[in-house]
Length: 355
Image (cartoon, rainbow, N blue to C red; front, side):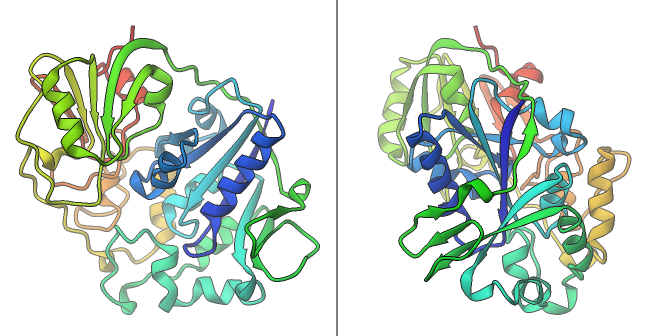
């Protein structure tokens, strides 16, 4: 059994800074530490990649049971930290529902009014993934059921932006963590072992960090797209990974002729239409939450065709951005991923071979 510390919160509470500080503190103690993140794509991985931190994406299909969750937790680490974004959305709550002990990150100015702040419709953008369009206040569902789901367990508050010491775990204004021993801890049995390869891998943009484990010879070009394209044309690699980026206007002219390419931003090569989302069609987040936990998005869709969470209505429960049927498909030697699809999923789906 291994220790897992679950950290969750709304936006602008310094959760990411607290996660990185906790990971560093463990590593300074000589403990090999991995961060797990929900499969939200670049929303989650941007800071980790820039800080060269180890992280692993947990798909929504892993929320069925703790046993399913453990299948996505890599073996070989002393400590695990799980960062859950948007806890009061049905997706975030579905992850948290797996655990009995979690830690909620709350800034010092909001510590005494946190519940009122979360449930105030005017603060909806902090509670719900901004990629799920919420056009107006009137269409915002009541978050009380999500609050009850999250807080129906042992919730330890980690206070950030603390101007002075407090009794429990806290993060001071100098970005130092205190009283870490008072954080709530879960026990899990990691079960994921990624295959290793000596293949030469090139990557650009934001991509699932599991590729670092699979390809020991991985060169990341960060956001230097001209340099990456030069390497792509040179064909001196076994696998190329095109990650996501903030620009939706980025287009590539060249393709690899002889090697496999995994493309997490299909519009660099293809013309695709964005999925239309209407939060007004979602009246009750509890219904979406229940559908997620049933794990049958094709037989029991999370919501109607145009609903905010309709992107998850596919067999992999991957949040698709475009109006296509499958979240992953192959054209010639390029595998396109619409949504945050990990290399382990690509291996299971027979799109990626590691040897």
